[in-house]
Length: 258
Image (cartoon, rainbow, N blue to C red; front, side, top):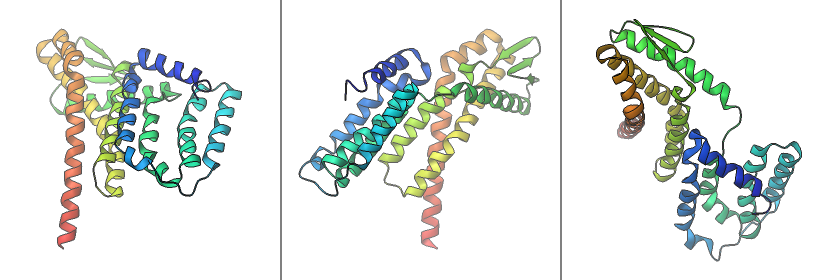
């Protein structure tokens, strides 16, 4: 496997070290290993419904990636490849036991075509932050990915789009959904809510920057954004997710009582 995926491993490590969007990729294999290690007692003496189908399918995906030169396709085949080996040699029960830790590795694989997503998020963040700032009494306007406030121009750069934080937040919520014993539907709701909540949190982070800059000047506003903006994002986003989870629990308990 190491020989087959040597190019993929090299690409992954390079991406983790140079691409801020996937800097958390270094930790994800460690988390996956720990989750599998916790299930080590289940990995012995269980052999049922073995099948080579998934393993063969992973090889076909791998060959497709090699023939097309698409490193993403080659690398993504590693996930069904691992699960396919487990299914082929140990059976369905063990494959199900390790399915999430292995699939969790997908958050360490850089997605292609993120430039268009980044540009879209830049535009959404610009509009949202402008409208929120105006609502809170700040005189400003926007054009493209720029926000104008008196003699100050804020450029919502790709790094300010929130994509880095959104991907890391999805990673955290995916792990949380796996660890909590809630019904599957509740987990789907939380996972679906990540994107709008993250966009709101990023817009609010930029809005706070505009407010601080309007009162205390551009330098202090940008210092906040770079030093505390990321923390603000995660506090708002994670708090919103836990509030949503609490509301779901409350609604479920209320429906049971009725």
